[in-house]
Image 1 (cartoon, helix red, strand yellow):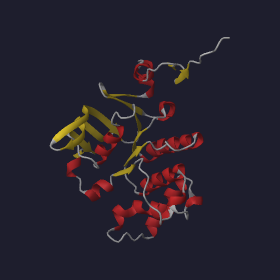
Image 2 (image 1 turned 60 degrees about the horizontal axis):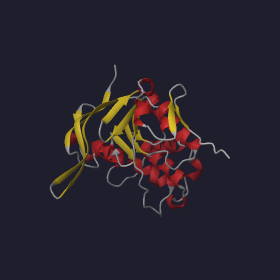
Image 3 (image 1 turned 30 degrees about the vertical axis):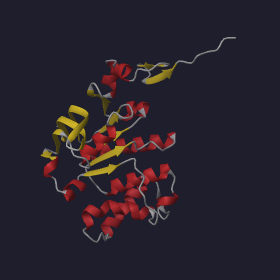
Image 4 (image 1 turned 45 degrees about the vertical axis):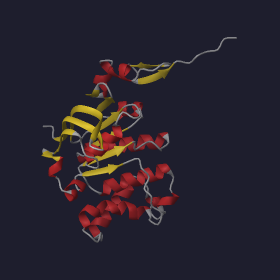
Length: 266
């Protein structure tokens, strides 16, 4: 039987300023199940990052409900929430005098208490997180010396060391080359299936999402959320309508967009 990890009901997200609410998206309803990789897609500025921050508790909702494993998010203490949800945002950490291993070790903070001292079991978990992302060669490097792609892998390793049943990621493949994008997406799907974790991420890599996601959330300012499996959204022509653009068309059989090339004639 499917286990609902996250459920949102009539959720409105946005910002409050000077006692006025600025809605970015309203009346959102959806469920994310344990053991699934769900990809959130939509145009820039549609509210994907705001939705992720709201679901993680970093930003207050404007209306509606967010429940995590059947409990309202408001009932979670800060400690319990940090032991339930790991999040990797696009913001670069402003850190200089810290090694990769030190940063990944911060993922254990929800369990180590005020002083943050790692025991032998914690050290093993950190080692395993580093090994899973194949960044052992970066372990002793300073964070400020890393490339954007290397830093992103380190942040994912930190979330993995946190050992939460839910992980949110905002554009986790944004700074990676194509082979690394594939590796990360395959790893995240493996993690969801093998460990029954709930993996929810925003991405612009549509074709990768189509091939590896269990569910897609298509976010639009007018229509809100459209949800389905990649196969369902491909067959009912939702993808063609959602990503309509001049100079390209969606090939349903191949499951990818094809660019119409203009041929100059002399």
